[in-house]
Image (cartoon, rainbow over the protein chains, first blue to last red):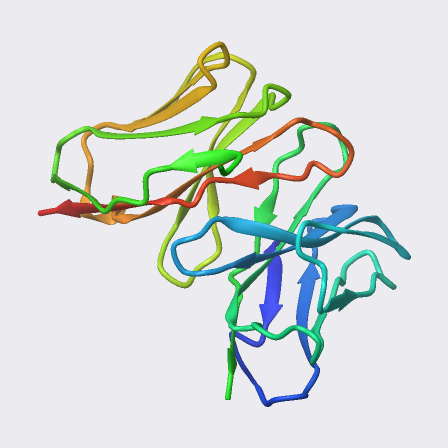
Length: 113
Length: 112
């Protein structure tokens, strides 16, 4: 089945620790995105990538890092610099034409211990 | 003021009623308008996609866009308990990156 797989479903972070969220897609999409969702709020864009080995900051990139070494994979690292990391993280992908539809994974809930 | 405004709800309706949802926005550059349905702790699922102004119907769902008023709507006919979810509007100017700007979501409860 084609789709976007995020893992793990739940993740806990200790103070001062970096954690990495995985996102893999087999839709053959060129573009991938990371969004953060806080309770009662809309999704906010963290980073996006339109092509392998290239990515751009979104609206709330501070405290996060990404890589795009393969077309299928776009991992997100939440660094210790992110002081309020507790949130629901969503990965998405799309083709790169204008107005293309975004499709989302099932999300990762990150909490601080 | 947020770029996209959406009433958080909850909106409670009896089964079989019409659900009416809407969003207002301030950026006149938005051209692509979407509605996503999100169940608790799941990823958003694309329901409706509209380009520019006009209406679009798909089964029980109707999406309307009024660019002159910067207002979009989603109607769900013959609502079912399974329609209970949070509905997110999203929009894009279609610029490079297809970045979406989301409303905060409206929680809908359909009571049997």
